[in-house]
Amino acid sequence: MIEVFKTNVHKATEANRLVMLLLNHFPGSKINFDLDDCDKVLRVEGRHFVTEKVMNLLKESGFQCVVLD
Image 1 (cartoon, rainbow, N blue to C red):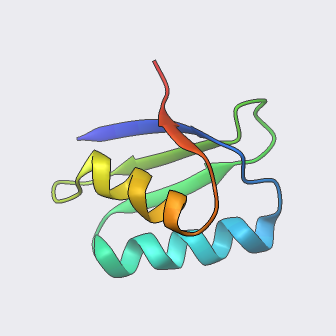
Image 2 (image 1 turned 180 degrees about the vertical axis):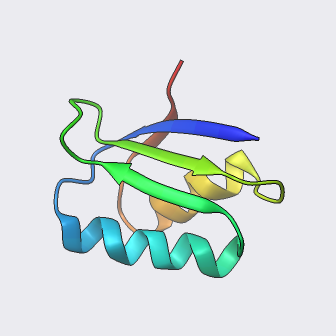
Image 3 (image 1 turned 135 degrees about the horizontal axis):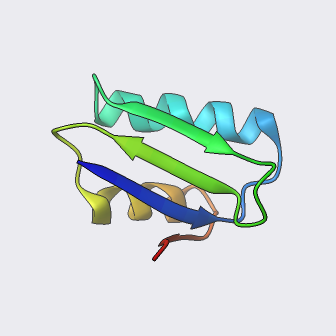
């Protein structure tokens, strides 16, 4: 499964911290940010992640996160 999210993450240090956080919850997933994209895209690929949990983890960390259509 692949999900793409629009975020408001702007700094690489923030993105790296969030990737580590998400990998702790969803080990084995491929997770990355494209901070050069206007939507500051977060891409999550894996078999065992929950879209709502990804959004909640980012929101709990102080960031906006919505599924990109």
